[in-house]
Image (cartoon, rainbow, N blue to C red; front, side):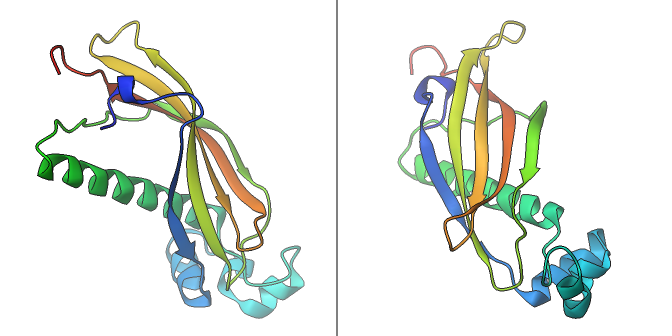
Length: 160
């Protein structure tokens, strides 16, 4: 369960991996970030990246997809066990977004989430606010991506 009371500072979870292929890098770039070093191998080699580089927004979008899928799987398992399912609220934002190293065609990024703060909301009874560091490391165990996310999380209903 992922009610506010279930979360603790330092709690870490691996949320999955994503393989960045030349095909998916170019497909994402064509639609959302059509810069030459995301679209063409040779242009990427001539750039500061040294190869076909994934858009930072592609790297972030892969992280978001894995976060959502992981939570959906967890909620389905909770429901199957007959447990109450915590439906999280929206995120009021994020900060400290960093693309630390290029992600190139052929790289696989493993994403993780670490809770940094947990507190009840002062203005929204029944809700709390967490901050968690989301990060991605490549297959060489190099940190390539990081941001601090904030999210509204429901408090456990009384009597549960």
